[in-house]
Image (cartoon, rainbow, N blue to C red; front, side, top):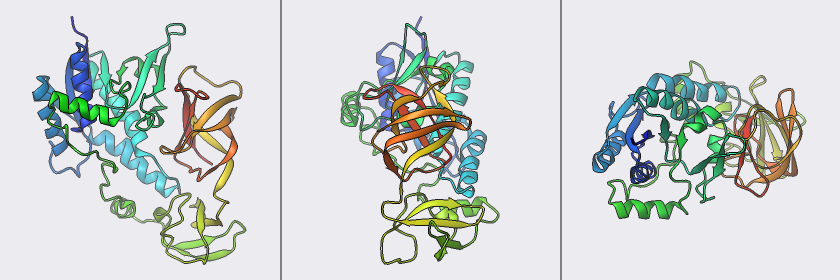
Length: 352
């Protein structure tokens, strides 16, 4: 009897190829598209329509799952609250954690499936010695998405398939789509946050929050007032352009202080920091960290890994870098990798 797997289909080429590969591998595949946001044009959005075309082409069933309430709670509300706290959230991590690998897994079980699959570029491999399911970077480091998957639990990993992990690059995925004549073979990639396609975060927050933080002060690291900012939600750590005021020299956002409604600026070089504190850590090869651990560390999705030491502390973990890192941002993830390797050791949320 074929093993049944539910795959999340976004209507893009990645999830389309992932579904096709699973079918080639002999799985009984069910496609599902998550209806996440009321801002979409209709209950069955264009993304769902594209996914349905692929499902029909592959001769597999397709369902649309209404996850709008969960998405609003776990992603949109979280996104809004984090910005008001002066932090920079990562909604894709929240969506993966609570919807794609939690709510979708529950839905899969209701459909009689034991596995879920996604079009992420990553690998899940079981360690037969320890019995733990491990997360590895994709063969394509350029497309690797393990940064947004560090939070996966053993329960979730044990039920997850990621068919794109072994593809050499995105070109290879597109070539496979063209070879199979998939309807989405030539569909361009989508890069924006799905519920804010115009990237105007401030306007989005203005619609959802009764009163956004007002104008306040730009200050330097000594507290000297440098000018007026237009509201905390317009800025993020490391930002240099778009400050709305000329200082005669490059100035960078070093920190955001919601308590005093201030944004601290510093000259070039001061945006680097030697360490950070992160909360709510999750580790994959083991349950907890009991001693300092050497790791290659990423402080943002697009960052190159930097060598450092991860140290357990009362708040979660402290990370000491061999070389100071630029624009360490509260609210973003810090993710730990095996030194010079592909194994994901875990990660946490940067708090300071």
